[in-house]
Length: 122
Image (cartoon, rainbow, N blue to C red; front, side):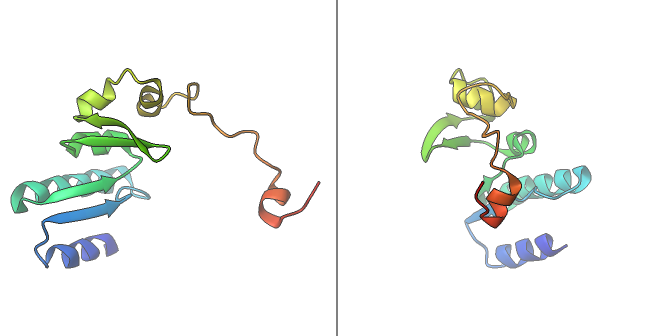
């Protein structure tokens, strides 16, 4: 509800551009689909441009006209959702397909919890 109120407040000013930061995080699947559909409808009906920052690729790719993938502070891929989904760049392919092996390394093993959170030294 709070997200819808914030969105209503934002569009009351008749903006040309709306930016969303992780609009789908923490939403159940039904609310997520509803939020995505609302963003797309606002774009279509009000002629808005939306910038959506999201790690939910499936939902974002369904509503986006253009996708930009950022990695290490640079643009790694740009294009339609279909173009990005079928990128031959190994980094982009790994990210879009959710593969654990590839150029992006998963940082594990992590430091021990007591060291990481409490500053304890071994």
